[in-house]
Length: 326
Image (tube, rainbow, N blue to C red; front, side, top):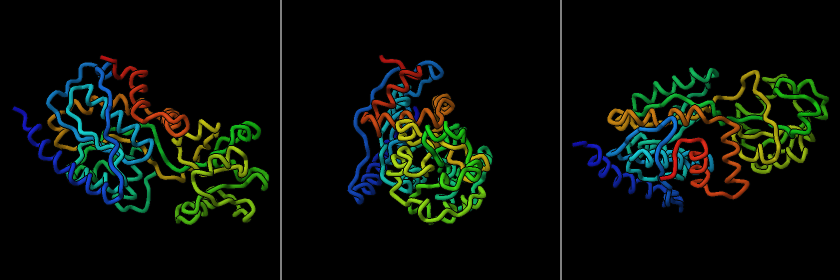
């Protein structure tokens, strides 16, 4: 008889108390709610997690909720008993819940773990080396990082598609070659003040410090529209934001590798993975399918089109053949 359901029952009670208490302090709760269940198919067909109890967590922004719902749907469809703890407020809350064993699964970013959780100040530029570094540290805490995705939700600079087509610019290093009046920027206050933010980025790419009339400081959310409207030629963005495709923006390649890597990886409780190694087989095909363009389109379905994250997750898994309707 598996000991997992007994362990999960005790852990689920603790998780409910811990996460609910933390969320209540912020006046927020987890997403919970109904997530559809199908039958696993395609690259994950035949995976059977009957008897497994899995508590799935996520942070409380669009991308994380969509990804968390994908995990819930896949695990349920493979036969696992899932507790939905997605949309938990605060990265540190989810991190602590994972460390304390109150969550079994989450999607996390390598750069976030390395810099925010592990307290490192120097990012590792090579994506695989950055992944291996966080994987090795977290192994001591009983958290297993599965192979990373191409998806890299890092800082970036974008420009309008029209300006990109007009100039042919595709890389950050080409900004310094433009006429000075075209070297204008929209950034948010945090990025402008960071030691690894705007000023050091300009220096790294050999861009002369622009005068105040060529730098607009605004809320991050306003930057996307301002860049599309060409209030500034280049706007600070996050690489997988749904407003990038919605507003027809073009993300420039960080060709001299200034920004840290924030590759997505599934992180799993070691005890769960030891007992149900099939969990890795369930998530690796999805991890391999995800990239920045795909995630930006999915985010846009929620943030621009007003769809529910769980519906976006379900339709994507159906369309990509990971699940079928029962």
